[in-house]
Image (cartoon, rainbow, N blue to C red; front, side):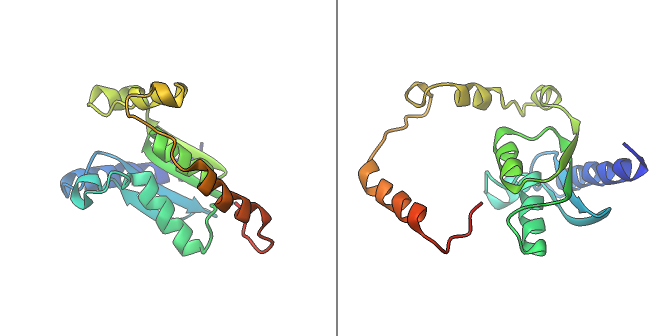
Length: 158
């Protein structure tokens, strides 16, 4: 870690505070950096937008991808004020940055009532054993669409 990393992390922490001060959502901020330049940033906007996916990392990733004209964050680094939740972790893996720095960890978040342990536990369970009822419906019809995708010759894979 060098001074630039500290600078970018402090920006993520400042964004978390900005989110609190604007009553936008939880105390989380994130920045996406490429070539030592901030290309996108975000803070949690869940309650202000009524969007449960508007976490700081998701907001920043969406902005970065739009700005870069790509669905992948090749060569980028994400700085986030807290260890990403399971949803954000999934988005990070799909976006494929080269590195992620985080400040607080999930235990710190749990202390202030942002406890994601239930989600981690649910992911480990068989789908039929989860707390929310998941029912398989019309798989044969949906498989046809998957087969169409598999056979499509001009698709953009990701």
